Amino acid sequence: MKTLVILTGAGMSAESGISTFRDSGGLWEKFRIEDVATPEAWARNPALVQEFYNVRRRQLVHAKPNNGHVSLVELEKNFDVQIITQNVDNLHERAGSTNVLHLHGELMKMRSAGPGQEVFDVQPEKIEYTIHDKCPKGYPLRPHIVWFGEEVPEISNASKLVEKADILVIIGTSMQVYPAAGLLHYARPGIPLYLIDPNEVEISPGRAIMIRKGASEGVEILKKELLKKI
Picture 1 (cartoon, rainbow, N blue to C red):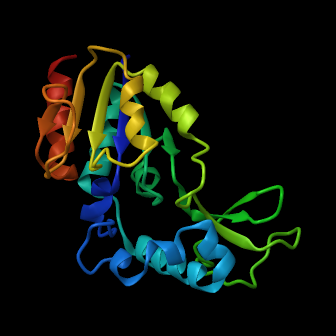
Picture 2: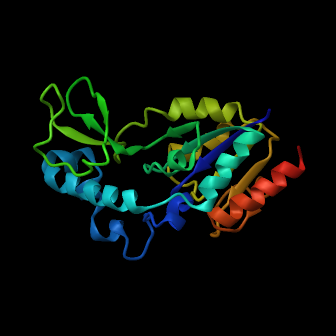
Picture 3: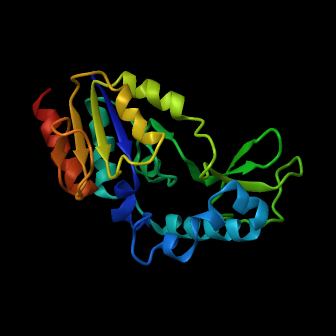
């Protein structure tokens, strides 16, 4: 069974109603990144940071996986599917994907701000947090998110997955943000590379097989193409 590695970005979840960085009127136009998604923001105004992620969780619990998420699950019947996502939502898991690595953290988890940095699942009945919420050891709970300016702990594991890929697929990401953009360099020369995005994406000319569609339609086209070659 061939290893199919999927790298997904914000465009993967856009059809589910999850705001992307570039959405007009989206969350990122209402909040400055510097005020809600950096270690300095947490130190300066943790209440604002908590509220920003409360808003995002409220949005997420009402969102549903789209057909693109579902089609990736269906590919597990014929491939060893490994998903590396830049998204912090849990839509891949809710669709049924069994191997998902989150590069930038997970919205439905909280992490202790103490030295142990223990991670705790967010329960459906408790999706909103304040500066008064503490871990069992008494330290504040912060969103389990990799903020701008922080290291990406899972990047090494992600690079190892890409190295093993027999087929690499990129969905809904500009491939401009590092270190995630650098994962492309770990792919073995000559393996099939597919890029699914309705927008123009800057990538080495001729390197990728382009599918200029959104996630749902694009993954369905990909699925048919891959299954023809088995």
